[in-house]
Length: 481
Image (cartoon, rainbow, N blue to C red):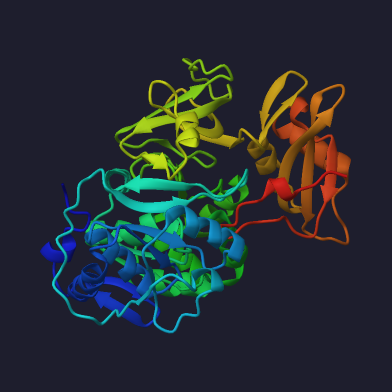
């Protein structure tokens, strides 16, 4: 047994812990408020958390965890059908929420516990078994109803400690972010991460470049974001000198949840002198790899495996790739203390997700450089294109397209082709819709940068790419003509 948040009882009481806008709690106040929540939920098995970007969500989650009760974060934007599935599957005993929140009909029959962030109660013991469930986080459900990944306390603590090692993350760090709190990036890394270190977090409520500049220019040291956020930052930098100054003074800029286009990397570095660090994780695995703070921030890669994470690439038949050349594409498989224990109520899916020797099949395709750096090229289901005898990752073609000045957004998919097996299709949002680049020009642009067999055979123009709440492109929504 070990404490997830030793600073709640053993750190400086008046140290700032968490802030949302102008509402904030010190460690002493957070210990009291979360202790009050823990006292109310201690006899439950599992509780839902209505995960709005508020102080109450942070207090509710910490309160459940220190009570040794599993928390199920709920996306406030979920529809009734998805919420109904999650609630029937996870069967929480109550829902924790901010006072005054209007909850949807799907939650009407669930006992409601309003979280009082100013409540006082003794700090909870925070000493449940390391294998006890900490969170049940539901996957995005691209191939059916969302599955609940059961994350034990051991996975949360080891992932956060591995990131502390990789990023030299300490109690002196102040994190700023504006990420949603119903998934592992915003909640586990962005809220629980600083609290485990004994540092502090300032949540923007809603991401905007002015908020980023304000916080980084007033003591924050780290920024977490997703590619959509960094793209907006890259676009704003030429006109916002305070933003460039803020990013230039940050200790660490981290991007995750999807690949950050190389073009945005380069624009941010040129304007600020800082490189964005990328890491790679999943709901089921938490964090697997990262560029290290003391390593080379190589644009387009997600760095090297974190401490206690074994990572291998395998061929389609499951045989491991033994020689890494930076070109051979394989599926990432991982094993380590960072992994989930099961999909809730889905023993079939759990068994199918693991190999006989205990590696988790991520479904992500990557290449690995001889020095161990991993470069993800896409999802096996949507981003691996088999064309003319080649295995091609959509990600590198998307990066090449985004380097063209006439392209604002790009996605690449494959579609059936009688001759090639699959042909490469580029979906383009032009920088200037009135004067889009010619299809042949884009194809030649890719062929010159990568290789002729990676050139798009079809180019389709869109007003915008379909994206989910995290900014990830939903390729299954890209239909074919």
